[in-house]
Length: 261
Image (cartoon, rainbow, N blue to C red; front, side, top):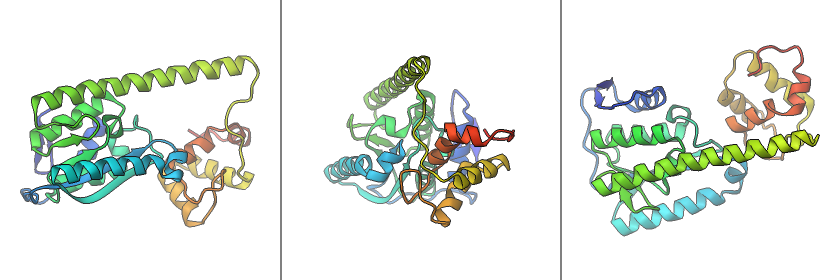
């Protein structure tokens, strides 16, 4: 039995990411208000900065969710999104998902809608743990692509199946990427996107990370100072900062800096 605030979730497998995300969402006051009937929060996610910048992936998800809500007669009370964040990240590392969970646990909506299971997570364990929490607490997760909900046995079967497929697809893509990079490296090809950032920006990111600053705080600072990304974008994300730190130019400039991770 896992106790978070005044909420209890019966789970078979403990997962620190799920625990942290639900802890952020839980109320500290006694009890939980009943959500208005027919209400829902919508959750959207795209994994790359390019998708976030173009808005194409988010737009398609929104359209699918809006159509499903209209068909089912649900009112969407809030939209939450995580843009430029991988589905392999745990729920505690996704502020949009944490905010959606907060709406659910605080009684502002009675269900969550996502377009596909892999938008919820590309990790089987995380997906199933969220589903188990939803089942135990009685706030359904509805997935548009499968027209399936955690409310029914058949829906739960489908969602677990597609959660497994989502993780398998992630693993396949990762393996293909590793294989392709290994071939290029063996051919002497310089890896990584060409770095278009001024060296002073790269050094700033290296120094802040070396001082222990988190990716999100580094991104926030760059956004506050209106520093453009390497591709001229106006908004930084944690994934953008991480990509800079992993670039060859950053490695060249970071010689002698021990704390870059």
